[in-house]
Length: 406
Ligand code: ADP
Ligand code: ASP
Ligand code: MG
Image (tube, rainbow, N blue to C red; front, top):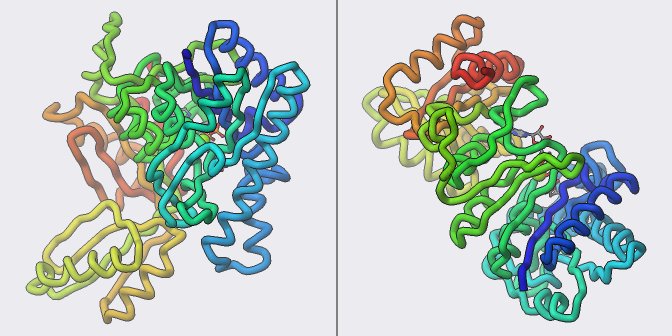
C-alpha cells in the first residue's frame, strides 16, 4: 500500500472554495495510486471564528490564567470542527472519509498540556481503515495521554501530527500544504523578493524552523528525519512543485551545492525579552548555574546565553517574562529587562569557518542604524537580538547582504 500523508494548514481549509482546492489535491494523490491520510489544522487564522487563537481568546476572556489542561480542551475544538467539515466535503465528493481525533488516530503523548510530546503512535486503526478503502481525516495538533486526557502538541503542531503519522505508517511522502509555494529564503511577508528553495536538508530546515521560520514546525522535521521520510512543503493554491526536504541534497545546480550555501535563509522570532542579571564580577561563576537552575525549575527555556564577569545575559519568550523576573527577584538578584525584542538569524549549512560572515552580518545592521542588543553564533547560524520595531529592516538588510535577493 503506497501511503501519502497530506496535511492542510488553517488557510487551506478556511472556506468552501479553498476546501475544493484541497479536494483536488487529495484526488490527485489518489489518481497517482496513493492511499491518502489527510491531516487538517483549525480553520483560518487569528480573527477567524474557529481559529485556535479565537478559541484561546474565548477561554482567556473567562480567566487570563486558565489552567493548561482546560486550554487544551478548548483548543481541541478547532481541529475537530475543521476535520468534520473536511470529511463532509470529501464525502459529498464520493470519497469514503472518516474523521478521527488525534487520540482516535493513536497519537499518544505525555501529559505536558499545551506542549505534549509524542510517546508513540499506534497506526492500527488507520491501517484498518485504509485497507477497506476509507480515507482517514485526522485532527492535527492533538494527542491523548495513556489516561485519556486530551493534549495538544504546541502551536503549529499539525505539522508534527503529519510527520508522526507518516513515520508510523511508513508513508512514501508527507506533503505539508500551506499558503506559500514552499520554504523561502525569508518570510515573503517581510521580504518581497524572497526565493523558493527547491531542496533543503532536514538539518538546514530544522535550524530555520527553530530560529523562527514558522512555515514548518521543527518537531515535524526531526520526526521525519529519524525515519528518513521525505517532506514536501507546497501551496494548496498553486501547482508549484514546492520544497523537497530530504536527508541529502543531491541536485547540484549551476549555483553552489545547496548544503554548502553560506546562507540558506534569514529568520526572525519576535516576542522575546532580554534579561541581564547584574553580579559582583567574582561571583559570576558560582551564580550562573543557580540562575539557570532556577529557570529550569520554573520550566522556562532560555536562549541567547552570554556569561561575562559580573553579568549573565539571556533571553526568554515574553509569555514567561513575568514568571522569570518574579523568580529571579525572589532569589534576590538585581535584574534588568528589555521587552519587545526579536531574534534575527542567518542560517546556512556552509557558514562554518568562512571568514567574514560575522563582519558582514554586523555591518549590514550598522549601515541600517539597527542597534544590536546581543549576539550568539553556532556552526550553522548567527543570531542577534534587536528591538521588535527593527525586525523588518534587519531581515531585509541581511537577505540583501547575504546575496539571497539575487
Ligand atoms: P499553516 O497554517 O498552513 O500551517 P503557517 O502560517 O504556519 O501556515 O506557515 C506559513 C507561513 O509561514 C507563510 O504564510 C509565511 O508568511 C510564513 N513564513 C515564515 N518564514 C517563512 C519562510 N522562510 N518560507 C516560507 N514561509 C515562511
Ligand atoms: N491550529 C494549531 C495552531 O494554530 C495547530 C496548527 O495550525 O498547526 O497552532
Ligand atoms: Mg503552520
